[in-house]
Image 1 (cartoon, helix red, strand yellow):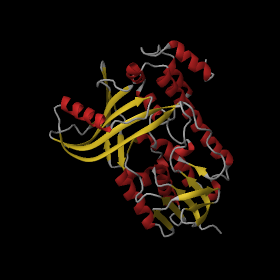
Image 2 (cartoon, one colour):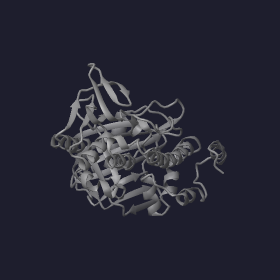
Image 3 (cartoon, one colour):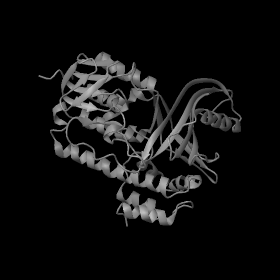
Image 4 (cartoon, rainbow, N blue to C red):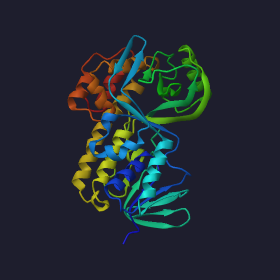
Length: 386
């Protein structure tokens, strides 16, 4: 008999959602989560459109929602648009508390911190101290696989959670303010008002390299706030990163155990950085089945993986066009062009659930200035798109 029903390798978003889903559906399940750090969740803020939370997940996902807004705004030099799509966020701190509480309540579950996994097989894992844990299902979500050189751009960001010296509009968040000087490619500011005088502000850039000048990004945040008549009273927290935006997949999603989740397994949105919708889909699939049935129903898993691969493939194509066929200083026009689409198409894009009709709508219009027609045609040809 296995020691566990589920062994979750890594304490990030994907495995945290799987744990919450499984423990909600099967409170007596034997679940072991292994995280090499001293806490789970890292130092992140996960944002998402609430429409992308499946009905089956709403009850157990709800405690993760820390802040919500009824609408959001995008701004470009010549266009400002508000979209009435409820938007929400969860911090790493909230994530760690909610997931930790779920483990504490479960009679046969364990969250083990400071546990480094050195070997993963279909039915078990080996830790650095030599401990071996056997299980019915291993889920390996330890982070992204290495990408081949020259196959990815990056979404670089520095975010400051701050107190400011004047009141903020707490009813709307700034998803994208691209009226700022365009540096390193496409650049925009992002602001989530957490309270009357508290917010998360990020300087974000879609660029071809991963080099991150944190001081320059901080200065960019200060300048943007100053332009709005605001200044920082206190910095509460800082986060930063360089997320890969690849235009080539590392490989197909593995169809055999162990289950490889999150970025490592290709379960992410390559064109946006939004992880929650895709991670929730996989978490619901696992939670709805017993540990032995995830791969036991191979047709169902293949259908789920194939549907995501089709959505991801379109995202990879968009990244190829953005990073390899568009002048860096003009990339903002691609996003302005995108937001001219119907609001529902925009929502489905962020959720990685575009229809064939949606995809056609994105390409049947005249391309925005800055896109090289010849390079774009070459990219379409390399993808077999006519």
